[in-house]
Length: 166
Image (cartoon, rainbow, N blue to C red; front, side, top):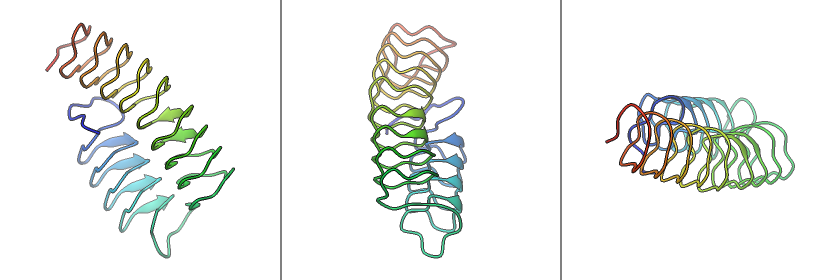
């Protein structure tokens, strides 16, 4: 994830960001935080002192956080297919937010997925939502390097309609 200028949900590498699917965001509030220390929410990956559920590699964690659980219901499922919740890592057909490398996922914070619905889509083409990173023909705000994007806060986006680019 390489986006820096995010408005709304999904700050990629954004510190103190509010929303879900925050990648490498410290002190982030929301869900689907990847490598976020002291993060509040669910789906925290390798997050120490995290409050919520879905802590990956977290001992004595309170909440849910199924590791490698298939067809699991909840949040923070790691490598769980057909999982419902948030913070799904490498989960296909997952519903929720903070999905990492999840195809056909509904929610926000989807990384490396095409035709994603939600916000914070990383490298997702034809994505609807906000915070799209390198998404072509994306609708929303905070599009990073997205061509033909509609929304606000477009970063290095050609042909984007919004407040301003760059």
